[in-house]
Picture 1: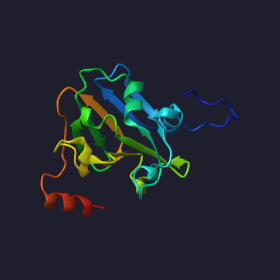
Picture 2: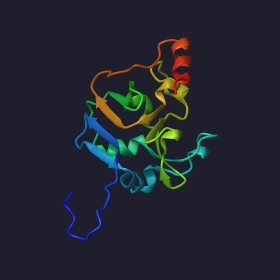
Picture 3: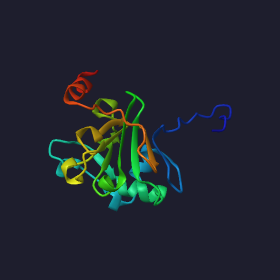
Picture 4: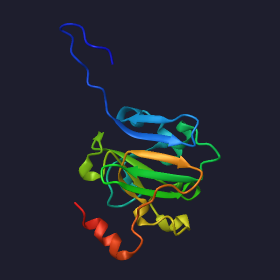
Length: 170
C-alpha cells in the first residue's frame, strides 16, 4: 500500500479472512468483500433455512473450488484454524457438493464469538457416507484451506472423551 500524501487519510485495508492453496490453479487470499461479491449461485443467504438453528450467510464450497481452479489432483480438503491450532483433513469428494463456509452475520464479517472468520459447515455429515466426515469436520475459526493429494494434518479427537474435552476448551 502506498504511503498517504500529506493531509491524506490512510485507508485501512480489509483483512484477509481465508486463504486457499495447494492443488489449485489460482491460490486465493479472500477478504470479506471478495466473499460477498461471489456470484449469487454460490451464495447461501440465511443458512438457517438449510440448517435449523444456525444463523448467518455462507458461500458454497463448490463456488470457492471453482474460483480457485481446484485441480483433479485434489483429493483431500484440509481445514486449518490457526486460532486454536485445529486441523481436519477430509475427502474432498464427500463434501464438495454440500459444504458451506459461513462468513457473514447480520451483514458484517462473522465474529470470532460465532466461529469467525470462517465457519466450515457440513449440513448433514451422515450423507457423506464416510467415517472421515463427522461432526468435528465442521470447523470454526477456519482461516486456511489446503487442497491436497493425500490426507493432510488432522488433529480431530480420536475418541468420545477427547471430543468432549475439545468442546470444553475456552
